[in-house]
Length: 133
Image (cartoon, rainbow, N blue to C red; front, side, top):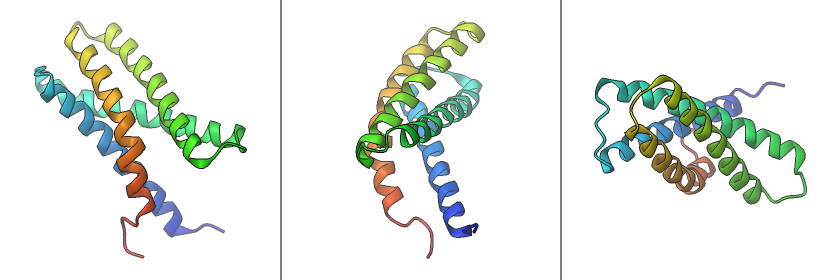
C-alpha cells in the first residue's frame, strides 16, 4: 500500500537537497565575488532543478543495476554521476543562453562543493528524522 509518511519523508529529503544545491550556487557566487544581479535567483532555480533531477535519476539507475554494491558506494556514485552530468548540461545551457563567462566558474565550483555537501550533510540529515514521527 501507499505509505504517506514514507512519501512525505522522500519529498522532504528532496526539498533539503534542492535547497542545499541552490545554497551552493549562492555561496559560490559570493565566495568568488561574481555579481549575477537579478538573475541569481533564476540561476539558482535552474541549477538546483537540473542537478537534483540528474542526481535522482542516476541514483535510481545505479540502485537498479548495481545491487551487489554497498549502499554507501551507490550513494557516492549516484551523486558523482548526477552532479557531473547535471553540471555538463548546465554549462552547455549557460554557454548557449548567456554571454557571462564568470558564471561558468561559479557553476563548476558549486558543483564540486555540492558533491561533498550532498555526500556528507544530506546523507546525515536523511538518516536522522527531520520531521515528527
